[in-house]
Image (cartoon, rainbow, N blue to C red):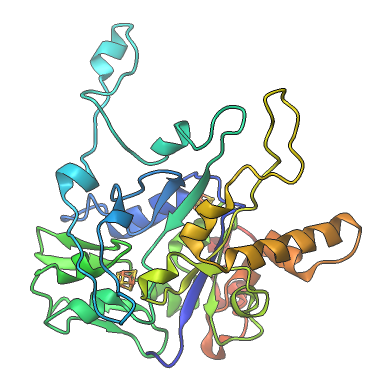
Amino acid sequence: MSERQLAMVMDLNKCIGCQTCTVACKTQWTNREGREYMYWNNVETRPGKGYPAGWEELGGGFDGSGALREGEVPSVSAQYGTPWDFDLEAAALGGEVAAQGTPRAGPNWDEDAGGGEHPNAWFFYLPRICNHCSNPACLAACPRGAIFKRPQDGVVLVDRARCEGQRYCVAACPYKKVYFNAKSFRSEKCILCFPRVEQGLPPACAQQCVGRIRWVGYLDDEAGQVHQLVRRWQVALPLHPEYGTQPNVFYVPPLPGPPRFDAQGKPIPGSARIPLSELEALFGPGVRKALATLEAELARRKAGKPSELLDTLVAFRHAEMFRLGAGSGLVPLGRRGVKSLDPGR
Ligand code: SF4
Ligand code: SF4
């Protein structure tokens, strides 16, 4: 356990799958030196396989007794995949811009398939980073003691001097958010942009998010919006809590959407486009209460009444989404001389 825990909340009702966060992370941390295949931040589509493909079937995490569950190291051929090229020569000669080979997966790939049948199709986006868990399976599995949690903020890091590239952590992480760098022969993972955090700046994925879906702050900072969403309103939930790692990335689940249509094209009262069972499988039993709270607040707003929760989720002021300074008081980004980095001000 760390003294304090930094956490992120993501509102899935606002993610548009643009991958700006993915690019912000990749250009900053993983575009070179054996990291090319890594996506410390990725955005996948539900239903879908995600990245690495089928990661939820690769084991890891803890069982009910607290023991590590066996896990697999994903393979390049089956799970990570390799980039494809486009046949631009054929396109230049008047043909279609077609992919070379037979691509089977890719970012945003699954949104073309979606779930359900027309006219009741549905999908939503699921951005993922390392959860900087309070009970990290990666840390528990490392025989070298090379993974540690920073006491001041709970960020989970790999000590490159101790790591010997044995990949127990890769197998143990049930979210598959540790990656092996074959060039440096070390494990590498999301560092929650700690050099930015130390300057009072949010991680790049959160700063650049065009949908303003990401809040960053300390869980014990009662005045912060992260605390409000996770602890007070309880509308933000961990992904797969049953894995036992106590994640510190929390998701506001997507509202189930408009009613389904019957065979005659008429809306079915009380029905929902996204099956509740799908959301419960991802975010656990807290989903029902979270959705009920969100729907009650939406009804309040529709009735012309104020809603503090919805005002928070709308995120009128970008800077208020991030509380990272000493004592977790609001860090006015403009006063730190970085106003130009904050597109919301
Ligand atoms: Fe470790 Fe995986 Fe948890 Fe990140 S998500 S702290 S890599 S167990
Ligand atoms: Fe979603 Fe924001 Fe990432 Fe775009 S930048 S995909 S809106 S999380």
